[in-house]
Image 1: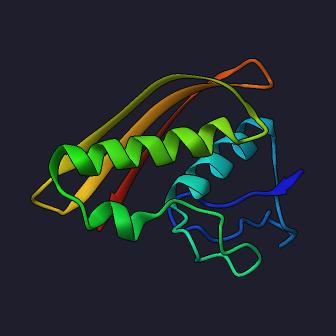
Image 2 (image 1 turned 90 degrees about the vertical axis):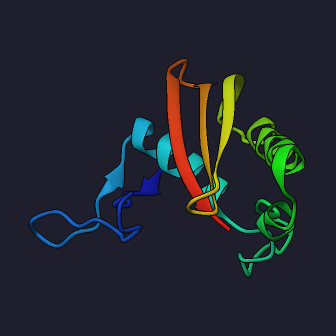
Length: 122
């Protein structure tokens, strides 16, 4: 069980009675994978080893940057308790915005396929 987040603002969501909303299984999987993809290594105070080494990735360029990002994201997905299989993982550089556009498809333990898209700026 997880609290539901608004994935545009990253704020907690409340119902009409101002009670915190609970994420259903689909929302839980989606928001967990998005947040884990965005988390910079060392950013979470409870576990400084958790996260993607975004500083190191954005210090690289070209194919080295893409290769390093793919490795880190693949490791994160393989270590996620809810992911059974990675079906697809694509990363594209947007040099005009200094960002990486990341999209992946996974099969989760609930046997559903999830497509996640994240844009990470350097």
